[in-house]
Length: 141
Image 1: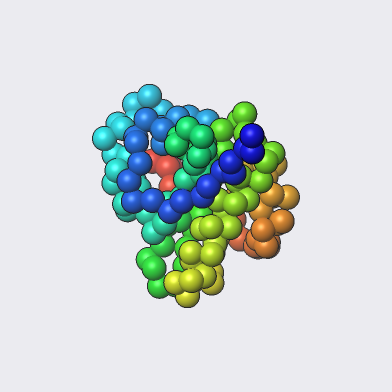
Image 2: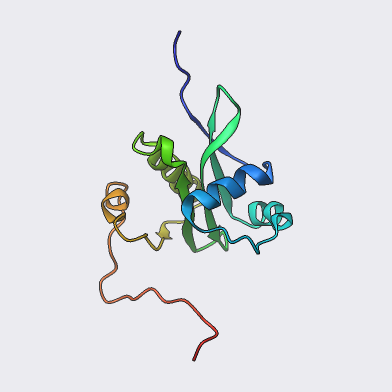
């Protein structure tokens, strides 16, 4: 019997519990977060992709793009369940998001890579931005 391939879908809705499971796999979910915000997180994204196991219909990976839809786009929250990493699922998700941006005329696509993941992103065409420093607002001064 032939094993079906993982499918990458752009979505506007998805079961919140599956998205939370993926955020937990990425280490980005805190128990204080409210799952009621997941639908807005999906619809508020410029694009939201899930990798779907066709045998179960469940998501095994995700990624999203935030953008104004005109000039710049940022890929974030790209994750694949640990048991399925190393099978190019993450690359397929990222490429789906890149292709979507390009189809909308957006050619400036950025991201902040997790430590140790630069080789993954350079294989997709991303390059480090010398002299630029990623920063994040904190309430600490």
